[in-house]
Each structure stands twice: as C-alpha cells, then as structure tokens.
Length: 155
Image (tube, rainbow, N blue to C red; front, top):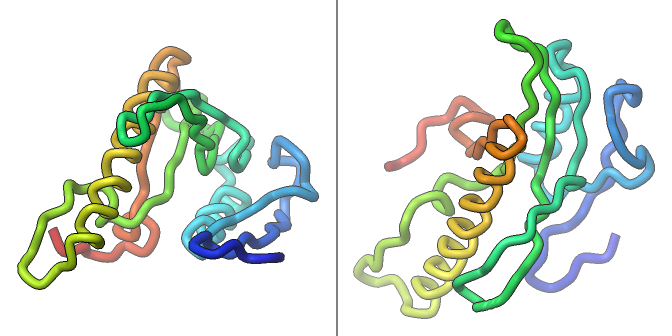
C-alpha cells in the first residue's frame, strides 16, 4: 500500500478465526506492528468473543486544533471474563505519548512543541472515549509497549 509522508504504513490483516471478527474481513487495516500483535492476540484468544478494528468512531473537541474531529478507536473487544461478558475499547500507544512531555536540555523546541500537540490531542480523544465507553457500560483502556511486550518503560 502507498505510504503517505509522515503516516505509518498501513498493512492488511487476515484473521485465522474470521467468525470472531465483526466487520469487513477484506478491510482490516493495521497501522503498526503493535496493532498487528494485538490483533493476533484478539484473534487467537479464546476469551475474546468478538473484535473489530477502527470501527468505533467517537466525535471529540480537539482543543489543540479548536475544532470537532473524529477519533477512530484502534479496537473494540467483547470478552468473556470471570464477571461476565465485557466490552472494551482499546487504544494502542507508545508510553511516551501517554505522559506529559518535558522540555529537556538539548531537545529542539520544534520537537517539544510537536510532543505537546500530540499529548493534547491524545488527552482530548481519551477523555471523550472514556465517557463514550462509560455511557455504554464499557471500559476504555490504553495499552503500551509495557502491556504488549511485558517491557518495563522508563518513567
């Protein structure tokens, strides 16, 4: 697939358990190796009853841009848990995008401002996604490399 400048390469995903996927099986797009890893997990995990990628859309106000935007959640899962069936909205993000940026010595101002912008956009999206999920009795979770790879991150 063609890669737009500044955007990750989009890859097609083909589930081994297509009956679990809710949506167009010929249009499952993954934007990172982390999303591919999670999609494999959702596809193969017997506790996951159904799953989908980028089908849930949440309108949100972007304070970084001062306009309404649409947030496409990475995943939605319906899972069997000890407490019953639960629906979860899942976002996959690098840990560094989940914490407020710091202006460290030697960091270029342009890099710092871009990190601040990304952080603010994420905070706006996640605030609306959390409310969207709560209004439906669902959960909203953010998974990082710490969760996906059982990897300690520098905090």
